[in-house]
Image 1 (cartoon, rainbow, N blue to C red):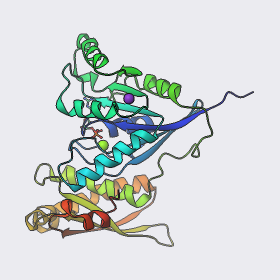
Image 2 (cartoon, helix red, strand yellow):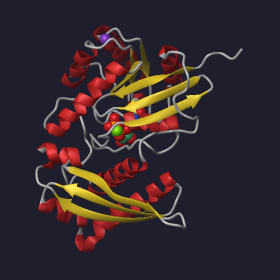
Image 3 (cartoon, rainbow, N blue to C red):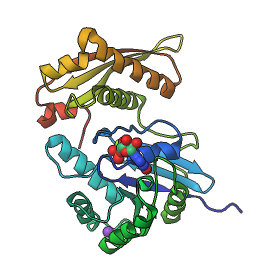
Image 4 (cartoon, rainbow, N blue to C red):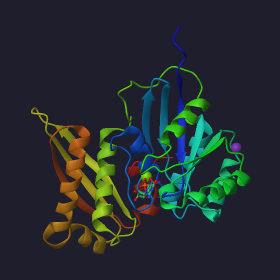
Length: 297
Ligand code: GDP
Ligand code: MG
Ligand code: K
């Protein structure tokens, strides 16, 4: 008789920039979650599905849990907290440190409110001396009754086997939720928007604060399989618009061509990408705009 398979949901949490998307990408071996060295790139949660002969893990790459600074922040924190109560296991990623800062304390306070088992992964151990790792583990062990504490490197793929093994251990037995081939159930459009946003943030370096959003206005497949995609990059100020477009349109062209390259890889099809830049003042604090852009409660 075949052994029953494990199947369930894991919420991946952690402060912005701790390496959540990098971890997802490594596990899936495909570029779906968006990584950036700027925080808050992943605004909508991306479901990533990992399947092997032991079972299936559906990851919810929740937006970073941190104190809300504006309405957009509130949506993100609210969504993340609700997710924690619904999932089978929480995987919390932290930076290697023997000091628990205010941001981590905030997450610990939230974890104390939920009954879900929590696995702690101390990430980026490739950046610290081996001897220090035990002290980091000890610091966190004293702070909360974690189910397991695992030092990892999402970038190098170190100890990720252990993470998978431990997560499988805490998942219930049950039927698989998705086909084995599924890596994400996020709609194509949303992934395309995330890719464009990532490329824009990368190309713009530090010239623009985090106030950009990307919406896909249309996505149509031609008879020959080519996709026409029209997308809008939304920013808060006229001056930002100028920077995004660049001299003679050079910046927008750069964003567009690097985004198109990744979207083509993701969709396995040729893409004709048209980008527009729009200014929407104060969109981060405006409920109506937030709804328009799909950040629903
Ligand atoms: P997220 O905001 O939590 O999704 O973080 P990202 O996955 O976008 O990663 C933020 C930055 O940290 C990127 O520049 C990553 O390359 C880097 N990073 C992530 N994991 C590791 C790691 O294990 N080691 C090192 N050295 N860098 C990492
Ligand atoms: Mg991310
Ligand atoms: K708890």
